[in-house]
Amino acid sequence: MVSERLGLLDDYTDGKTVDDLLKMNFEKTGISEMISYEEFEKKKYFTIPIAPDWKDEPPGMKRFYEDPDNNPLSIPSGKIEFSSQNLAKHFADDRERPPVPHWIEKGESHDERQSSERAKVYPLLMMSNHPRWRVHRPGKS
Image (cartoon, rainbow, N blue to C red; front, side, top):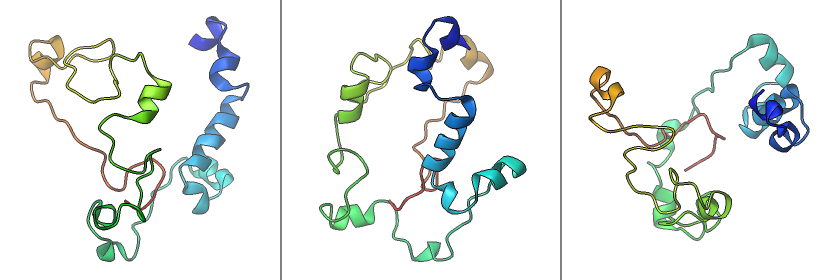
């Protein structure tokens, strides 16, 4: 609705409807290989099953560690990037997500200072990487 009021709806949605965008995102997650979109719409949720052989999976990025050329990461270089090529290309001027990661205590969308109003109510700050079986497109690490 905000993009529509700003006259940017078509730029923001590429001319797609809300239903088109929902279906597109559903398909990008990889869930479409496990449940149809119609079934998902009816049920309204889906629990990704645990792989039966999950105990046989090597920990973390072990395959990449052992042979990075044949087990590339799913980023442009396929390697660990100390400077993100995607962020530099698509969000070059984003001061909260710079290509070279570093601590940004306060920005337009967040305030992690211990002196912030939120810290008075929630004093414990937790930072975490993505879990291995995250909500994004399933895949092997």
